Image (cartoon, rainbow, N blue to C red; front, side, top):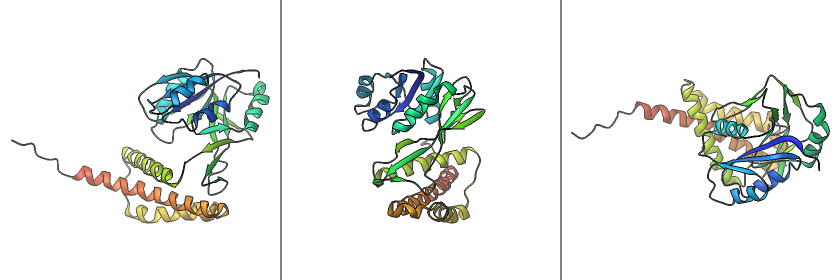
Length: 259
């Protein structure tokens, strides 16, 4: 297969279950860059075996880590994937076929479909879940935020076929992830000067469930759709509860030093 002048960049931490699927899904990439945060499993070994240039760096937050990976790339066209993502064969073919017509001023939005609880999730706001993953670094760059990182570009275009996302291993993994992200979201609210609201603590989770399960038809995904909507509501509850906890801790008197 002909190679394209594209660098595949991936950031990793303990991704031995996903990394091979991710890297093998882009057979036409001219190079693979993996920035690893000192994985304790076989991620680094597998990445090396698949031809990646691997760098190990301490975790700096999602945006900064991905920007660091882009800086190491030799090619100006960047395909940035998470380790639990992989191009579908149809998307890999679409990029290969459309390559001569790509515009260096555009960032390309790729639809993403996620696999969870034994099935592809198509409703509840989970699909098509467009992600800007393909861009020319002269016109696009990762924001350095610690959460909800995204690529800034002047204009975007959409591709048709999907990224396949293995989002959670199981419900326990979903709970752990919700706990992690709700903490980051609470920190971001506090940093932006947002204040705790009892009204939002009580009603925002309810409206989130209504939005994902009814308005966005999560019920069409069956029982997994119900579980996902409850989990989304609980994540919103945790975000506001943790913001309250942050404010509570800030008001506590400092312990006196022993004389």
